[in-house]
Image (cartoon, rainbow, N blue to C red; front, side, top):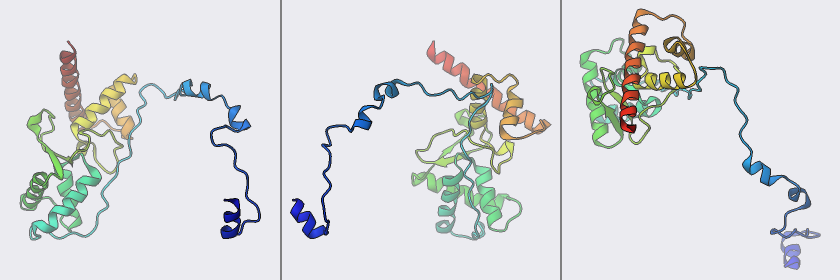
Length: 224
């Protein structure tokens, strides 16, 4: 075998390989048993600190006017938006498409074909639509890729506070409470990098807090 290697590979000498079943003297000295049971180092985060997943925003590109484009054009673009940003409020997904087409305001006429595209995508098994009557308290539909997690706690990204799905805010509140935050509303603002607690923001956070409390009560009832 060594002769064949020298003949075909042109090697002047063949290095003797160690027995693969026997560890080298260096490896044999490693404290492998201790490493296997070592505890992870504490993070040392401050009370109320919660890690957020990055927000993957859809990258706008020119799209046809939804009022005149056919379903074969609208459907894949809307699927692209939901794949990037889902779970995403339907109003945000439709507004992103509308702005990319050059539209300024999402009118009822522009929204209708986009809503139709969402339902076709759901029928095709590509996205899921969560309706308000499913207990989210959102007041509108939420779109997400089929088979994806129902809630993803992410950075605010380019969204306004009221563009964050309500159950995402509620989940963040639960995590902040577990992390030891005192003023949950202020902790949410701090986590998102926001400063002012406006009347509108306070109302939205109040709805999220009510949702978090309902979910907590439901969980406690299930454990009883």
